[in-house]
Amino acid sequence: DSGVTQTPKHLITATGQRVTLRCSPRSGDLSVYWYQQSLDQGLQFLIQYYNGEERAKGNILERFSAQQFPDLHSELNLSSLELGDSALYFCASSAEAGAGTNEKLFFGSGTQLSVL
Amino acid sequence: AQKITQTQPGMFVQEKEAVTLDCTYDTSDQSYGLFWYKQPSSGEMIFLIYQGSYDEQNATEGRYSLNFQKARKSANLVISASQLGDSAMYFCAMRDLRMDSSYKLIFGSGTRLLVRP
Image 1: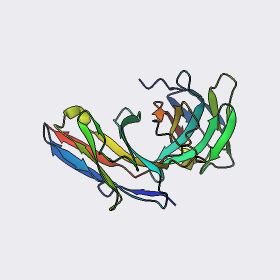
Image 2: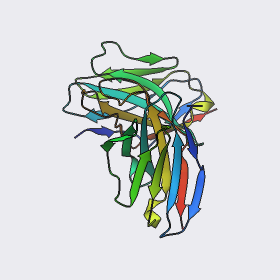
Image 3: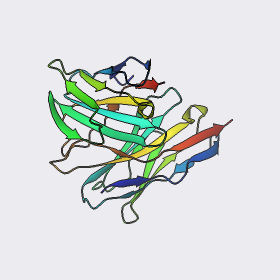
Image 4: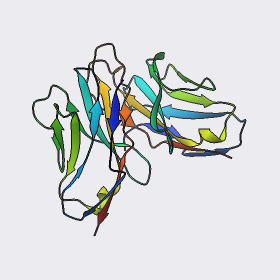
């Protein structure tokens, strides 16, 4: 058990809908990262938050947004869903922002999103 | 730009034998870290081993070792004494360690390992 909790584990929805994925980082970790794993794109970094502030942005679509709350949990909001958004969405956490350190990234078990 | 290449989509190994999973990387950074993660069929990503670009010795973690050849830009994972539970997808990943960087990991496409009894 990595200590990173993601809910829900599975999500089935229709095109055009909006969903929210939730992540609780390991106790004490200040950074949260979101990754998308799809068959065609592989594992891609979406966005990072550190202590409530956006720290880095990757290949995140404008239809997607995220935030980190004062209790450090994070939510990834996906709107106007398309078939191609079907993927496994991972949340990961680390203690620091990552700069200059070799610390590991701890991943949650992921949320499997199916858009029908 | 950083890039990770894993050229073996799938591999078989006999139980109790050793196996090497290949990983090559491309970066212009001098300071970077290399990681291997395991993803079993249940889906979670499990950290296995880490190698820093300035580490002089190859990293080892139990049955896992990393064969780091900096000049060739390769970071192969060696699993000794394979077990049935080692059957999974294995991902090589990299991040730069510059002070102004985030923890963004760049992943390879993965290698699916199947351990035969």
